[in-house]
Image 1: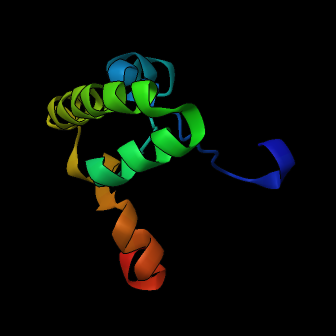
Image 2: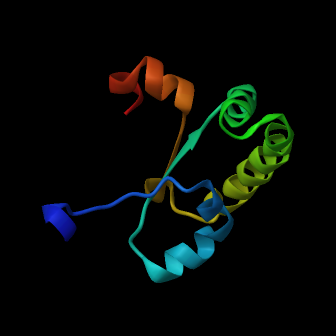
Length: 96
């Protein structure tokens, strides 16, 4: 336990493409999928990385969303929870 915490988290979207492997590495792991509206993803990318990269972010968002949904179907219900970024920001207490 690093820093006295029983769990750690990572928010890297690319890990959604490797959920089966992560389960093999960490058999007791749990997943919290926070989905952001694609329009907001594009705006965020555009501000940070420019227009060209923002256009590609739509395809990335779709790939991650579809992959995580397929992977989640293979997990027990108590190992996966999904929420939206918008709900988490506007109503953190109720969402969590």
